[in-house]
Amino acid sequence: MRHRVAGKKLSRSAGQRKALRRNLVTELLRHERIRTTRAKAQAIRGETEKLITMAKRGLVAAEEEPAKEVAARRRAAAQLNDPQMVQKLFDEIAPRYADRPGGYTRLMRLGLRKGDAAELVVLELVEEF
Image (tube, rainbow, N blue to C red; front, top):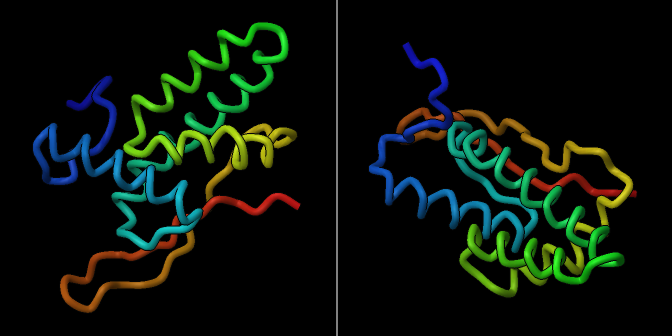
């Protein structure tokens, strides 16, 4: 039974899985759209949503207590590989979704990959109008 076991293993060891997730989330924030397999996209979708929500809350709390924004930036930096992506997350992405209560990402299916028939998807940040 898999009760209370979170996340997918993705056929990798713990270190490889952690590195893969960090890289995919960082690249999604950098390009705002990535093409990957459905399993990998589903594995990082929740992490990305939580990071954006954390950044939004950090910006709101910064008006009252600047230390809370610093703490939020440090927590985001611990999960991302690139300091520039932390800056982009707080300066560009989080303000864009300030009025949106959630659902910052979208999965669009592309079909099967020729080599191994893995299901491919595009994972992208939803455009705010």
